[in-house]
Each structure stands twice: as structure tokens, then as C-alpha cells.
Length: 455
Ligand code: NAD
Image (cartoon, rainbow, N blue to C red; front, side, top):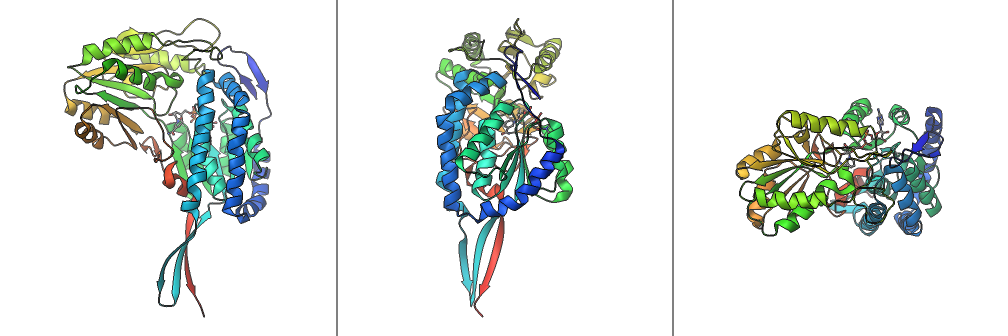
């Protein structure tokens, strides 16, 4: 498989894909290796993961550089991601013992009742490219801590990162047959779906997630899906510092080139502050520095998938054809890399694809709204339910609005953030199941009830 640099179009490296036969053989070996891994104490497994956490820091410069080379994100964002993933690992190290211990529940006559948690067994983790360290850690770290073996398929757009993850986990002490990198595209993914695995954990698009859920349904094993979003943000008329808010909203829209599952994808602004807000927002967006992701100071690098340029162009021309206006941007930039200007479209409405279909790029549609009722009805008019944000100094009003949006995450006066302490659980087409938080630790275990009597 050839790995290209999307910022230059140049070939970075060629790697061997994992064939379906090799994937099958890895599963066979994992069947013997997983019980041995599970027979270690929880503390022993935590020690291995603690070592992995330290190795990520030791190699962070190399990891960040390879991530930027293969996905085109600014080097500083790649460094932030490696350190952010370490923060998530610290959460799991700190919390796992609390949630995974067996619990005595009650004594009933001469019967002691206990609850314990077994690993699922051998799971597949089919992953995405936009934050490969973050979305990977959400799955394979709690899965390994709780005694599972993992067949890990990084995205074909983040293969170097996937190989680094496997190398460092192995160096930390995870046996090679307990964490197996599966290299390739959908063909390798399909080979995982063919196996009788004990769980399927996927991060990626709704389309692929739905396909996977349907393909494995008859196996009756847990399926976790972290899918896309079309996340709305509403700026009410009870706000003070428009410049500060505009800066935060621009970052929420354009960080990682808009290629974040929880990127702000559509903005609604109360008519009373619309003109003032848009003036600040436009100047924030125009100030974004686009260019070679390896250069310092660049805020927006190359898109990861060059073919996505055409998709974005089609969304913009659909909007303009239906009466929207370009406030700024709207063009791909010249050169070999996949660069697209940060783009804002105003006078948008929900007949346009830019307001209803995940863009996953540096384009944003904006609508003026009369009041909260109109904002709520537009925010709710969506097939996705990952996150929603409201800006208001009136917390009662902000929480009231957010409480009426069907979404797994609600942001008041912030956006586009993830905390390992809180559940990450998309609703509707944004997903199924939970990662992160204590609930996300329990996604990788099955409960067992013990009825214990002395004869
Ligand atoms: P994708 O669906 O194209 O691919 C995801 C993974 O699935 C890749 O590893 C790919 O090789 C594999 N795959 C593709 N077809 C397959 C098949 N038929 N069988 C098995 N595996 C298959 O998604 P992507 O482009 O990598 O990621 C972008 C999407 O991911 C966006 O929609 C984004 O919002 C979403 N995402 C969601 C979250 C979240 O936490 N909710 C996080 C990151 C990304």
C-alpha cells in the first residue's frame, strides 16, 4: 500500500497490507494469547499501559511528525494530539481499578451474591484518520486494561500512526498476539467482519458504521459506533464579548481543517447581535493562516483526502445556487497539496446540503434567527446528534435550550472539546454506545453474577 503526503502529493512510504489469510491467522493466535493476558492481574496490565503512556512522550516528536506528514494537520496540532491522548490514558489508569473490581453485592441467607466483569474476548477496533491517537486510545486502552485482545485496523489514511501505536504497545509489554495491527483499507476491514469476533468498535462515517452494524448483527456481540456529526452552535443575544466568542467559534469550526467529528458545522446567530458577531467572525476566519503543515504558525494545513476537495466544492456550489452568499473563502488553493480556503457561507437555509450533510472540511454555513424557538427547531432538524453548543451569559436559558436538543454532548459557552471524564456517546446517526468516562470503561466487559453458597 502506498502512503502519500496530502500536503505535497509526494509518496512517503510503501507498506505491506495485511491479507485476509494473515488476519485469520492473527485471530487464531489471539485466541490462545487473550486468556493469558487476561490471567494477569489488573495491576500488571495497568503497569504495561503506564509504560505505553511514557513511551508516547519519549517518541512524541517522531509521532507528531509522521502524523502531520500522513494526514496534513499542522505539526503543533499533532503534538497536541499525542499529549491529549496521554491525558486520556491517565484517566483510564486512574479510574480503571475503581470500576473493574469484582463487587460483593449482598448476602441472602447463606448465599453470597457477587458481581464481576469479564473481558469480551477478542475485539476489532476499526478506526478513523482525523484524530487517530485520540479515537484509538478511547477503544484499545480500556479494552486492553480489561483483558481483551485487539485486532486494530487504523484508517488507510493514518497507517504510519497505526504502526507506531502497535510498536509502542509491544515495546511497553502488550504481547504481539494481543494487540495486532491490521493494515489496509476496506478489504482488511471486511476480513475482520468475516471473523467470529467478540465485539466490533468502529470510529468513522455513518455509512460505514451502519454497514458494519448490519454485517455483524447476527453474531449478537457488542457493537460500538462513533460516527459523524453536523454539530450546531447558537449565539444568543445575551452575550458580552463578541470578539472573544467569534474567536472561539472560528476555532470550533476550523480546528483540524474542520475534520473533527465534533467540529461546529452550522452556526445560528440571534438577529439582535448578528451584524456585530459576523463582523468579528469574518475577521477571525480571514486571519487564519493556511499552508504547509510542517511550518510553524500554520493553523490550517492540507485536507487529508484530496478527493474531498470536490465534495466541498459541490456543497458550496449547491448553497450558492440556492441563494446563499460567500462571506469569505470558497476556493481551493493552487499547488500540489489539498488546500481549501476557510469558507463561510451566509444566508444559508436547510434546503442546502451545507446545513444538513456532514461537511468534514473548512466550510461553514451561517443563519440569522429571530428567537430561541427558531434556533431550537433548526438545531433539532438534523439526522445527527453528537454535540450542540449555545453561547449565553444566562445559564438557565442556555441549559434550557440545550436540554431540548437530542444530543450526546451539550456545550454552554464553549464548543469542540472532549473530556475523558465525560461520556462520548453520539445519538441518532452519530453513534451507538459510549466511549470515555466510567461508562466507556464498561463498554469492553460483560457482567457475571455469582451465587456463592457454602455446602
Ligand atoms: P470511514 O467510514 O470512511 O472509514 C473508517 C474506517 O472504516 C477506516 O479504517 C476504513 O478503512 C474502514 N472501512 C471502510 N469501509 C469498510 C468496510 N466495508 N468494512 C469494514 N471497514 C471499513 O470514515 P473516515 O473517513 O475514516 O472518518 C471520518 C468520519 O469519522 C467522519 O464522519 C467523522 O465525523 C467520524 N468520526 C467520528 C468520531 C466520533 O467520536 N464520533 C471521531 C472521529 C471521526
